Length: 276
Length: 313
Image (cartoon, rainbow over all chains, first blue to last red; front, side, top):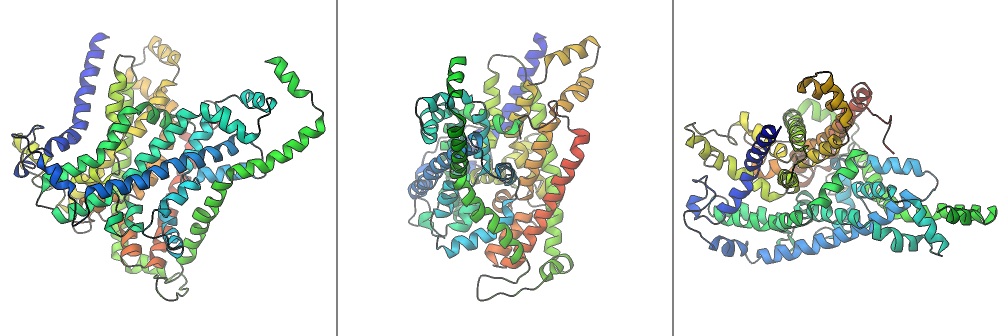
């Protein structure tokens, strides 16, 4: 038994190292002299070169990564907050109230999880174009405000099902109206699920590439994903270590958040997936 | 507890009923953000997409209904469509089963009681957090380019370098390794499922002298089939629409060998602005995914086992 455990640990470590090696190598490469980036498989550079970060940060033309980062936060923070807000309210409606066609609407909501985005992307684009929302962040804010991602509603509904209704009833007796119950009784208990929602939406929007590509077209409004792609196009086969450095910079916030809050991600995934 | 419930039952029946009817409107009010969003951002585009697919809409000027012309064009006169469909099916067939197999294997290895096992879970989950990010696609390009890390590793084992991304026969395979690397979220689902398998079943099998392989195929796998089904459907839908990796790493090349469906849709709609034609293509994708999902669901009661006989509500 103990031998098996040792073997398991050994196997898990070797496999884990293999899987993380590309990420570690990326970090290492960003400190290597440019010509060494591709020629060495080691993690550590022969001599540490720090200027890839400073030079890469300058970005393209007049737009630095400072702008790309500011744009990304301007995009991601409201989207995450609006998603959490709207999804909590909608989930409360589905989990705690009866209304006509509830079953049908719930089924429709769940089936949007399986609806390929490709089918609705063109009319959505044309719709947003007619609203004059292109090259603004509204194509991201408005769907978030309207709880367009059913994954989060579903996650929160599943979580609410685990909270006893006795609590709601006690609050009614204490004179709480339905919104009061949500704000004062349920929302505090839903904090872990709401945090999961914020974190997932934060990271997904941070990594968002396709929608940014079609909706945002001026470089000064680019989020980091588009900025990095632009750098790749312009620097291409010249300054590899700068591209590596900026790749590291764009994933650092996600990695930090993930390590700080990894239990919320794992809980979020297991809550929704299991009962789906 | 019981006094509180008794207290609640005391008011006369009439006000309670009125409250219920009021409650119905309230429920609708709470879900109204989603409802509005669903009607405007999902249902309307869904119907509009079907309508566009029968037109020659191209974003400028008026457009005409052309009947089935887009669909006929696609299947009879567009080698790019045929190529893209073929490449995408291959990609799905390579990436999805490999991803689920690895996810399940790792989940089983992680399903032991041990100090520090959470650390491993975190490490294996990390790549899928970054999944789809442009930085990871950039990284993949550097790993597999001719002078890249993978070839350097091979040459240190004195294996001659492989043209991972430049060879039309290999490029698609190389790209499909990326989603496999991001197996974390599927793994978490499997892990959660494994934790719910009753230990008595394993003990009983042990008493009966069943080998580990037999235990896996007769206990573990059957009990995990609902999760396999869920993962299979969600991962397939995602894989069919893959865009970022192919766009950044190879841009569809070489010789259109990685020209995934998502790339073709992007080109036709947002590069050439053939919105009508691209809508028709997106509907073909929708029908393929729908058929796939329906077949899985219909056959799943033959192979997926639900202990509680339903959706677990």
